[in-house]
Image: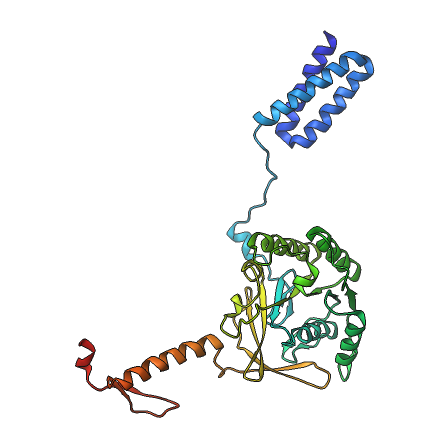
Length: 358
C-alpha cells in the first residue's frame, strides 16, 4: 500500500508541475520521483512506472496545452523603440533580409560585389548611397573560387582601402542537401566572420529548392533567413534570378522568379534591369520611402556608378502610356478627336462631341 500511495503522490506532483510549467518539466520531475520508488521496491516500482506511463498518455489528451508567455507592448512602450541601424542609405537596415534580382548576365553579381565592398569600405553603394562600415560574408554557390578571386581583384583596382573584413565562402559544388543544413552553414559563417552583412549568390544555386513556385517552401526559407538575421544582428542579401523571357513588363515586387513569397517576405528589393541598351536599378523597401530609379554605368574595375533619373518612365508606365496613345490614335482615325498639340506633347480635343453618343 505504501508504494501505491507513493505513486499517487507522484501523479499529484505531475499534475501540479504540468499546470505550472508544462509537459516536459512535469515528465522530468515525475520520472525522477518514480526512480526513487524503484530504489525501495523494484517490482512495485516497475508496475507503478508502467501505470505512470499510461496515465501520462491519458493526461496528454485531457490537459490543455500550455503556451509560452508572450511579451506585449503598449503604445507608450512602442514610442521608446528606436529604429534599427541603417546599413545602406534608403535600402537596408541591420536584421533585415533583401533580394537582389535580375536577369541572367544583367550584372547583378557585380552589383552584389559592389554592395559587399561598399560596406567593408564604409563608402557608397553604387557610388550613390552611403553605407555603414562593417564586416561582410560573401557566400557564392555559382562561381568557382578562381573566378571569384579574379572578380574581387578587378573591383579592388582604384578602390578605397577596406575598413572592415570581407570573408568569402565558395560553395560551388558543395550546396547543402537540406534547408536546415543551408541555414546552419549561413549562421555558422556569420558567427565566425562577425558579419554585419551576408550576401548569398544565388538563391537557387545554394538552397536545395524542390519547387521554386511553391509559396510554402519559399515562406519556410525566407522565415528561416529572417530568424538568422534577427539572431545574429546581421542583414542578409540574396541574389535571385528573374523569370526567363519576362522582359521589362513586371513591376519590381513581381520581378523575381518563382513563388511570390520571396518578394513578399523580403524587407528590400533591388531590381537590376537592362532596357534599350541602358542599365537601371529600381529599389523598393519596407522601412524606407520609395526612391527614384538609378541609371547605372560600369567603370574599368566593374564598380557601378549610379545616378538618379527622375525623368525616366518605368517600363509599366511606358506600357500604360503606349496603350493610351494607341487608343487616342484610333479615335483620331475615326474623326472623333484631333491633336492640336505636337507629336511629342499631344493635346487631344473632340471634333464632334455628339458623335460619342452614336
